[in-house]
Length: 106
Image 1 (cartoon, rainbow, N blue to C red):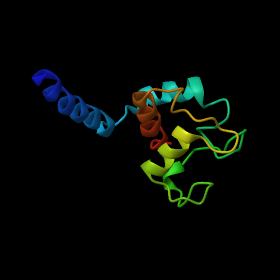
Image 2 (image 1 turned 30 degrees about the vertical axis):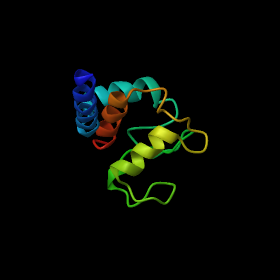
Image 3 (image 1 turned 45 degrees about the vertical axis):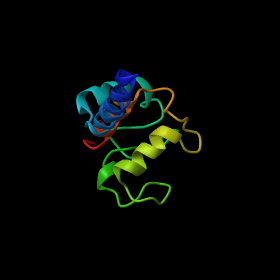
């Protein structure tokens, strides 16, 4: 019983640290190419099914009107919007962090 009481807080702390770990933009480019490029351009702002994402973090607002922040962009990735599906069950937390890091390079 003592092991369980000790393990739960350690597990919770490690999950919080993993959530704060920044993504890898190079890996994010690969995830983007495999999952996002069908609907989004990364090298320009021309709309496909979804908006072009070049310069996303230089914009004042997302198409939803929300300020461009990590939390707002991750919310769109996680929950989807309009025709975009939610990726919270499609990509791992780590893959979504990698995509976020990649989007910052555009």
